[in-house]
Image (cartoon, rainbow, N blue to C red; front, side):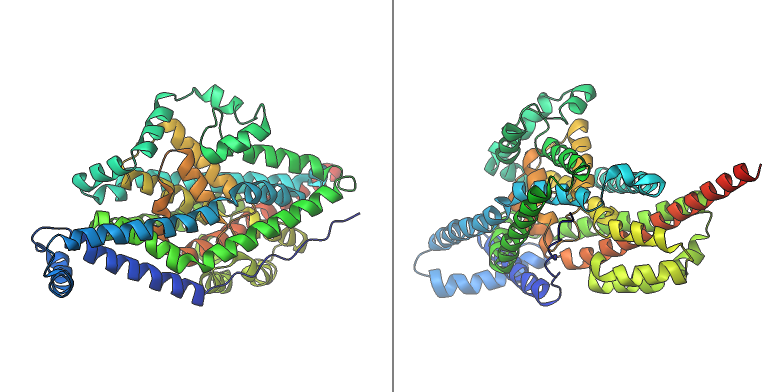
Length: 476
């Protein structure tokens, strides 16, 4: 008995990103004016001089008779915008647990019985794991070297630490309570899954939190593939939960122009123009990491394992690369990827169909890299120090977050939020990166799709070598 798959919600592009960009731009501009308006002399620097002039006009028109009214008005605006932004975050955050459990469970179930995966399936899993882990490690290494979040001035970072003291204290406590690697591995399997789920959301988990929940969902999914007839009802229920989760997240994203605009207004009011410098550095790190993974890692893997020329390979798949970049959707690019895999790369149909179909949701190298960079960047912005063990947790959670959720509209955002909470970083900072997400989404989708085709080429080459070896042994 097969379980019918509910269609995924279509990935919206274009207008939604434009509205979010307008909302964030409005929040940034208003925040810069408010930040300069809090200064006693409204001067210093090009940005301060420009927005100081705007603030001076507002000051003369509205607060000429009440010199202290300007500061009080800005404080009132922050007190109004803050809760509106928090509501947007809460709407996303409350769907994290059902989304994570259902998405990872279904991602495994949709592959089929793990006992029947055979050589192609196991080889695909091997290359997928290697490329995803290497992608996140590249991103995290670049963040630690470049430190884009450190462009925030020490004075502003100190004020942020004071404002978010609870988050900073939580991060320090977790750093002080760092566990040895052996215990971290043991804690991947939760003693009490229900208790771990609650602790993963509110931060009270003494184990591995959401990472343990992810492994629990994966194990249950693997077990379900061995008895699909008996678990058809459970699979159908989780498909419904997944659809509900994505619907609510879709509603939240419709509120993103207002909610994210309010969040970024509050942050910009505190940080001023420093946040723009940090954001530019963040974009540079993400694009640099994606480019390195695309040009260096993929080329090396193609040369070593697939015995192919990287330049010839990229020329052959150029159509799929253009479609991926323009649509920002691995699923929308799947038909083009299948076409170039069989017609240009000359891969066997059974290999291309399996690897590319699974990879459209399960092999998301670019997204995994992006999520790891976001978490460490925001930790630097808010002055939260992450020790080695916490960064390893970020690596594992970013890799697992790429399984089944990355190709879904907004699916990575709630997962980034829960990773932020798990390491004591304020989730409010997620609004900072939404304004540049369109460009980065296009770029990481390109890397995702090329990664699928690289894995397909490697698996096909491995299968061909195995067939030749088997034929040689039979002939002997």
